[in-house]
Length: 527
Picture (cartoon, rainbow, N blue to C red):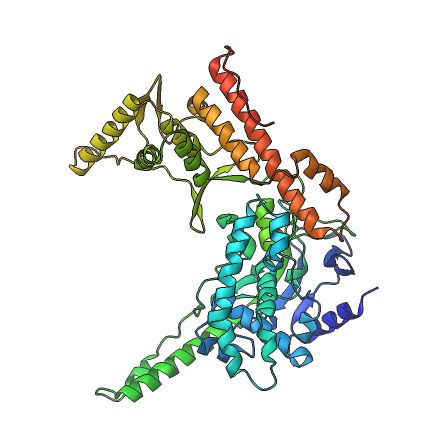
């Protein structure tokens, strides 16, 4: 039986141009919220929803549009204001029937207390990132949202625009918004945001009839980013109106005054926007089945191919045994190990040589790091860096001279390749192309030992209070939904620590293969 709020939402959809197929069954669960199931067998190609663009909550459709645009806000910042504004109106908002079905906030780490962040996420990929996010978002609120409260209409409570409300709005936008089109930008799309995610198992696809962007899913797949998914593109009209010959003939010869020019420019902009709005709103949004789904089964959307760190960061949940999980090893951990083993000056010079070769780690929010895949395979650039850090001085000097000579020849036009392009080098006993070589060649005894030490340093970030085995036991003991935050945090911790364990195994296996089965110095590391 449909709940009261679900019945209200269905009435709202009918009145606002949202056509939900009878083949979809909206299910409202007290613990899990609203999900979508098939009420009959669904076939690939079935259109199960048509959604008009005016029904979407965007900067352009919100009653706060003038306030937002006067303040020069756009993207997720402007959409947050639109969402807070409509929520503040309660039942007077045109979106009240839709907003009442949404949670107050999504339980993303973004809205967790500092105590929960430190106790649950310490050592994980998210700990530092979320704390940095929180600082930036608080700064955004202080600089852009708080000043708006002095110019709100009398029927709007300024308390509806507090920092807590802003974080709640950001959590909903991060987890539920879609890119609609060039005119509207991103927005809240009723019904489309009720389909739950399942990695690599998309049943239904969100698409705009006449838009360059089909859905946030495609953006995520091409991006595969680690930060909160925020729309930052400027809102620009999707088409421009053209002037007819008659318009030119009616113009009065001679120069216009500044006021006349400004008025004409404003009129042109208004005509352009109206034309864009008309064209965009004539097209609609659809949810189309991309595979068959049996009656009674849940219908899933896919937000992208993401690891658990990204899923928890953006959407507030994780998936056990996620094949897209990764672990990052910060460059800082590597340089700390090198400086403690050698000197800071030594480390800086070797790092500079590594960069001359065109090598770099991944970058996110002003930090540089190396990825370790779900199978435990480290990023090649990390192994190259460790190889260079451990080169004997004579080999290092020869390599530095070879790179400098190559760069000099390239500048003089005597060589076609840049110093950063892969080329054959002989280092020690090995000849290979830096940037293209197999990891096996780089996993010498020294590199293997160094990497195992660095892995132990990475593992230590989780703290000494709980072991990998303790985390596994804690995860099994979790009771959902009561232990929701603990459960998803432990899924993340266990998946990361499992990858570190696989990395240790990868190092030993590859090192033994490289040795050809000969006896090697025993590698000691935490198991």
